[in-house]
Length: 104
Image (cartoon, rainbow, N blue to C red; front, side, top):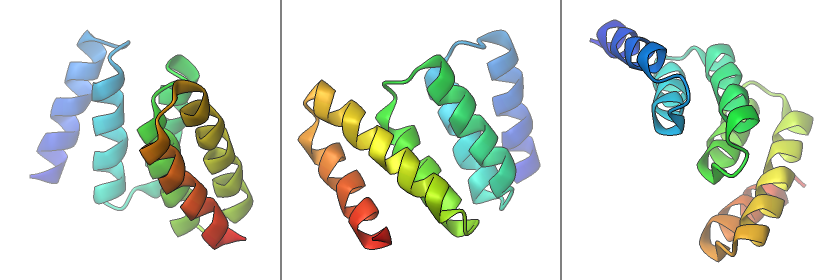
């Protein structure tokens, strides 16, 4: 079933390469199936195309944490805090700040 979902998301993304929601879904599906490196690549691709997609900062940071890449996770959280502060999304900002604070 997971392979089918991955294939479906990849196919949809081929049809709509600029669809941020689809790219986020693909990144999350990679993460859910345990392919953390692919997930990070998709989160980074999403943020390169749509730097205001704040959920990708948080989920990307968590994925990097799971990989033990804590410096990269901190940087992604910091970028997310800046984006959410600029956009006025205090809830998302506080989540990312809390994740950043936990990393020290």
